[in-house]
Length: 77
Image (cartoon, rainbow, N blue to C red; front, top):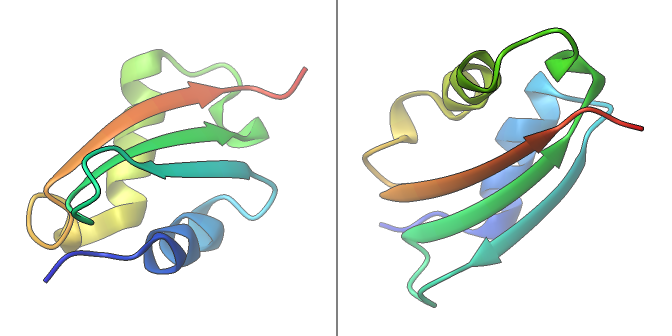
């Protein structure tokens, strides 16, 4: 069963309470999402580390209920 934007956002908010989060369903099927996440939690981390934090926030749903997630992670200006 696909994940909805509110479900994904709730998982991300728990890990990144300060974040600005934008979610786009890229295929219209609830399985393929693009997320733009701006959070101070990413400061000083490599892009790979930032993405690992996001995947950890999604947990076991990543690769299951959430089939594909394209990420754009940023630090606040």
